[in-house]
Image (cartoon, rainbow, N blue to C red; front, side):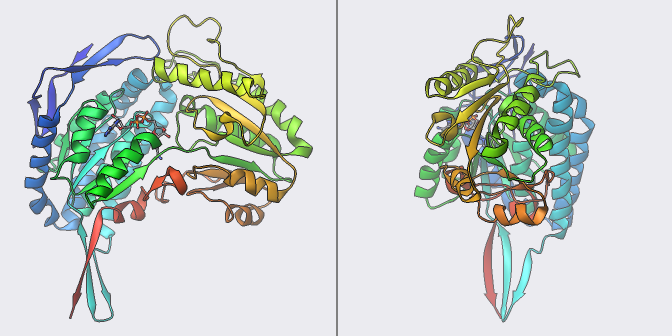
Length: 472
Ligand code: NAD
């Protein structure tokens, strides 16, 4: 049991302003594994002041020197790989093999990309008679969710620091321990005091105080569309920049001629990864009527291989969901799906057999899902796949785009060109073509209600810059 009482503000761990705490629960054992301080508006204010004081010095630091500090941050994170993986396994329930490969290694990779981009980015350009300067936006308030807790922190903090901004982070209440490890890595990397500050706390208290703070120049938020809408209204109302990375209901389109077995198996794996708690998960699988029954059979068999288990066992592929509320939400969606006429071909709303504790949900496949059903429209955020039927390509495009979201997606076809032609018609921010791999430099973000702005790579860095033109 780790009992923490500090906030990382102005380069040191300081006692929180009030004595409220947040309990961190292991979703596999239901045991309390730690506590962190529940920050208040007073803590947020101290952190924003520290970030403001550090801003002029950091903004004026040559990009190569900023790059060197971010490089040191990369090294400090890489050195903590095992601790990061074990921490995310404990507070999120992610299977440890997945936690190492994704929750630990991905943010290390992303930090590495920003160590390079900080040095290489063209912060000045000549345009006719103008010199255009790309300057830091200022103090950034970052609010992050629990599902990829370190990745989402690094995807905001690293580009903001690379741009010359300073940051106050309010991480999710379910996963604050890995955020503390991040702050320790920042301290070890020798970033100047105040460039990065951490305030743990509840969303409606500490998160809200950060979003509303007059000393914050930009807010970057990742989380639910419901909260993102409110954050956008507050920050937009103050005429400040806002970046929103929100929910998704992405389509995985299998065109006739695609390698059916491969596409279905990878599609199922995509949904089951991280217990389905991935904003970009391909939760709607669209299959041509001619091969629909075959695809459903393959999907059901593939899902059954994701037996829920102890996330500390390296062989486990499916851990619990993050908390009891999330389990209720996900199983509620499975029930709604069946009530509205979908067919359960794998899993279901009951607890998995032999599981006595932990917030586990059975890997579930719903077939016969039609576009108006709740399970085709709303983000479930659990290990639940909806398989949908289409008759021709036009209908496939229509169904894929019939969503208020547009974050990610996949297209499988006989060849890449056919898949690319189809992907051009999709209203979504990212599409993987015939199993194209995740690229940490590719811009990531949503069309429609999935958000505003892009993260990762040079596009993610540009979000934290504002332009000034000098006419010579
Ligand atoms: P959430 O919106 O409840 O919480 C996200 C963060 O916002 C947390 O840190 C929370 O404390 C904070 N928050 C809550 N209320 C707030 C308020 N009033 N003011 C300021 N901050 C507040 O979301 P969640 O349940 O933590 O995360 C799951 C959701 O996040 C899913 O819908 C998922 O799709 C989405 N998500 C999106 C992306 C993306 O990149 N698009 C990535 C991960 C998660």
